Length: 127
Figure 1 (tube, helix red, strand yellow):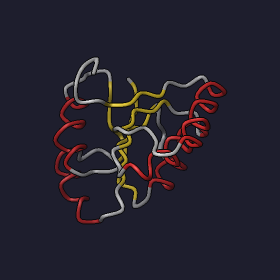
Figure 2 (figure 1 turned 90 degrees about the vertical axis):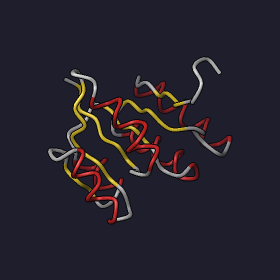
Figure 3 (figure 1 turned 60 degrees about the vertical axis):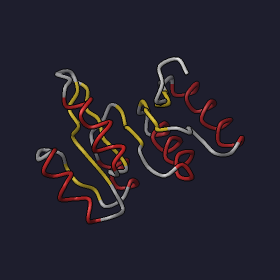
């Protein structure tokens, strides 16, 4: 079973990503993180076995994971994707993947060096 984490627990994560993950029997979301403490209770109600982390850095440093699902505001994507890749994790990230060309170059280099998959979520299949 793959062990995953969701970073950023807004509506996109709770209403879009989480239902998809919980329908799978080959994936367990074992950790979650959001900087807004008010999102902890709704997350715990839906994922009682998942460990809560107050920061993405704590989650990335300590959670035993295979992949991370990044659902944070776009300005944070580049840094979080790179940190996850540096940790050796596969990454699913909400769009846009990055907001700066330099971030894209770094993500591509790290994905190649670590031999990890980076995938961006888009609303429309093959859009």
